[in-house]
Amino acid sequence: MIPSVLPTYSRAPLSFVKGEGSWLIEEDGRRFLDLGAGIAVNALGHAHPALVAALTEQAGRLWHTSNLYHIPQQQALADKLVAATFADTVFFTNSGTEACELAVKMARKHFFEAGQPERVEIIGFEGAFHGRSSAGIAAAGSEKMTRGFGPLLPGFAHVPWDDPEALEAAISEKTAAILIEPVQGEGGIRPMSDHSLKAVRALCDERGLLLILDEVQCGMGRTGRLFAHEWAGIAPDIMMVAKGIGGGFPLGAVLATEHAASGMTAGTHGSTYGGNPLGCAVGNAVMDHVAEPEFLAEVNRKAGLLRQKLEGLVADHPDVFADVRGLGLMLGLKCTAPNADVVKAGYEAQVITVPAADNVVRLLPPLTITDAEIAEAVTRLETAATEVERGLARETA
Image (cartoon, rainbow, N blue to C red; front, side, top):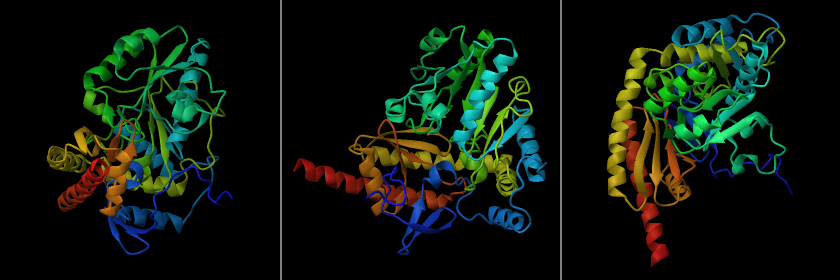
């Protein structure tokens, strides 16, 4: 008999009932150090006082009106995002998946209004993840994402990761945009080099294409800059944002230049819940913290400390780990043992990690994690690695 919750997840046998900063408390009272942050969502940790206050205050005043009316909290958050980024305009969604849908529509509408309706194709990359909607899985293109869900939405092409020649060869008279994650998350914590991102930006300029960046997972301070593309000194035309922007409250956004968004006039897109007073009240509180230079400097400092300790962990356990990869507090442990075994052993050691492709374990802690918690996290990962080694020894005995 099918369970009452649709079984599309293979869930861990854990039920958390409370969160405090970098910690999750299970029903049985055990305390887990959270290096997953709800898959890079809880940027300020669990139950951050500023977010609790913002949500509570707004909940006592007004929850929802719809986008038929002006929403002051939405306007304030849009103004902050425009002031802090390349963007001229923002549309708010409830998730990264919804942001992907609008990014695709916006790029195609741009060229339709420009008198080039044939330019509908968007080029994506092997290993990408852009959500679970029809456009999202078509943009990613992997068999894991698309099998059984055909016919797929047309208008997408795919090239190998970080292959400039293949990318240029894929461009045709139908191409509208290139869609890329500056750091792939689900794909195994794979950063695209600054050089390659600059080359993609230059190629878009040369060929008259729009550059869409998916910063749903790598944005909002995760890499030590407000957005990851800033490390390369480039700017996109359209950018997808979600996860960390709401600090745990469902919120997403599409940021765009006036040029890229020129076709999006009244009636061309909408959302019942997107940018409602509750979500934007929390989003404003997140921005007030994460966009501060001092906060981002601390993310970078802590990222260096964590990476240094992880390098030592890898060196001490070569049968479990191969290397460390990533940027800021978006790090991956490339495993030599099965990554599922490492994640499972972590549960026993009461540390939460997240699996990814390419046999990688993702470490996406709250950006507020302390130095002491970093030390404790590596200690618990050490315990997990030792247990995986014992399992490997039993298998070969």
